[in-house]
Image: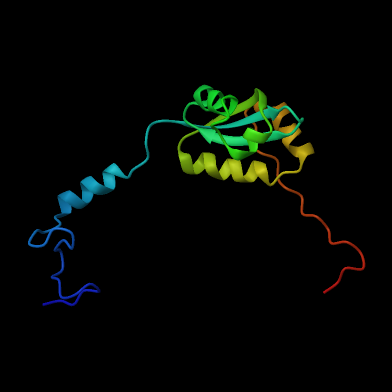
Length: 139
């Protein structure tokens, strides 16, 4: 009898359903269910009332914008109501959209504005320029 981290269980047996076996077909069905969804995700950029920008991701940008307007969106937009959607870009899945959102949020305002200007042309996010350390601040 093989040892298991949760007690003596046999290889291929289910911890959740004792006495049953996890077959290769079941494993493939589980993996297929976790595969990429065909629903596209969108990175959107909102202009807020105070002149700032808010970036977010969603599968339905118009519905998400309505939530922001109703004060049921992100905490940021509850205190800075959005005025309009200024840019939207489509991605194949949530992971890609999340990576693009993170990358956009790392950009200084000027680069976000450059991305806005190029969004309709489908260009990539601008690369972030590293900030040089201030003089006299050595460690």
